[in-house]
Image (cartoon, rainbow, N blue to C red; front, side, top):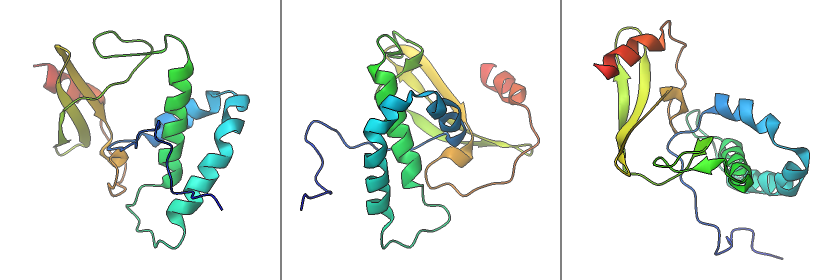
Length: 154
């Protein structure tokens, strides 16, 4: 019986701090079926292994969500010229960076903010704090992102 916990040496472990389920729901249906068929069994096996015998709390990230993010990343990287770096971007960017992050709060809403300098380029990534791994689900807020854009640009 093969050891399903053994990871091929050429595949690095992936750690996620933030995964946007909304973006995955938009982008994963656009992946061609032939690419998905090649990884579908792997997702199901990984999801079963990660959840078997584990009592899951409400704030635990879904293994399926991380698997979908991995599949989407793999697909995008196989598309020639689609993925670039912060300094030389394509349609999408990929890289490793030390960023400061936190959640900005005011009486209207909350935003997760990641920021720093990467390859001499100032970078700010903004999203929902609900997409932070391990974050508790929150009620939807009545706000506009324009408020934060003005606040960050001043």
